[in-house]
Length: 483
Image (cartoon, rainbow, N blue to C red; front, side, top):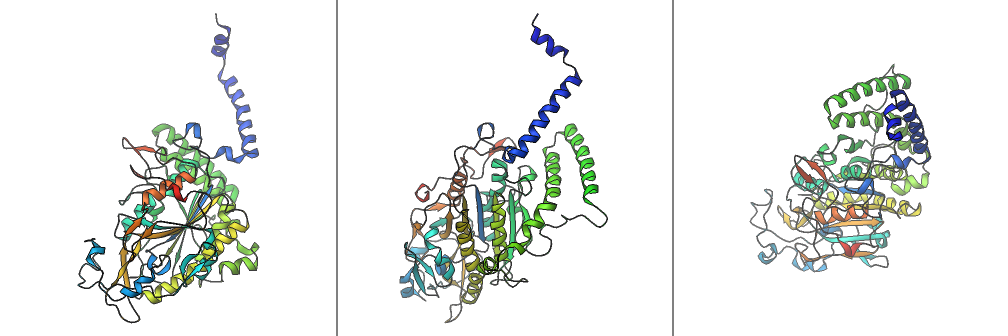
């Protein structure tokens, strides 16, 4: 007789739970000594490991919703002044499809940048005078001038760059990172979103919550929206008459019922709901502390341009909150700033938009650098597409607009893992076509995942019988920009 097997056979239920209690105590002690042990495992990696050592721990994406004009801000083409008012040559347009807003135009006059330009830093980066503060951080920027997308209108273009697909239903980049890596802070979500309204186009296209949704991933990985005014998260506080102890008892009872339902039905969304309830309870303490800016110095508030009330449009405040979030281990922070859709009145509207974002964007990069956070944090600045070189509607002496343009536009990167003071890619003399080193949306997302330690071809999730990934079946690393 095998004595070992005999002992196992005689192990009673009481002995089993007695031994398990020691393991629970050990796990509790380990969670206190090293909270990172409880981070979600990396899907696609062996036993929860990353695919390779990451260069980046956190990402802040400053998303300029509406499509900022690369022609007027970053892609310097002085020769365009010689073509101002001339018709866009057919050899440049090459029969490109147009949106419904300009398809009926019989004239497509070229419009030169309206502002002056100057070079900045040791890199000599050309930048519009509309962004003087961003010029201060020119030597920290990695500028991709050859981005392109397949979408021609806002909703599919935003959906595409966020989820890798033009149709709704796929997880956003932040959700993939939450699923693949988990969170560094158990008291805050791994994926946070904040929205601000710019002073440009006040009737800009709406932002759908599915832009930061979890798609077919478990619901716990969806982005959590924080508001810049009032309660940061709606319905987070206890209602009148509910104290923390009562809330804890209610959550425990609800969790027990949900656990019974999960055991009975095997629905993973039930476990996601339990996790979200627990996160909301922990956020009741962590979020008020996070959003309280009273501890920030007057110099810091001034550097970002934070002012009382809503006069800063919320973007400056959101940038400062983003820094506070990554300090506390939030994995992915995305700021959506609306108002960049300048189909008309561009000379006035784009100035307002630049005033909204120029100062806080530069202050964020400088603040992260001064605190040593830029060494493992990546900042991304850009929108869903660029704008056309030709005028939408009539071109007058003091007014014009620009239509959507996905064939080329500019995205800025700063921080961990990318070359500083570096420009990649080039467009033609009309800022209309890419002539050097094209970077597709899938390529950008593949590179961001790579910097986070994830192979975009291996970070997958099985849904409806197929393994899905952020980059679908596409995407190549943009190796020349990697530090």
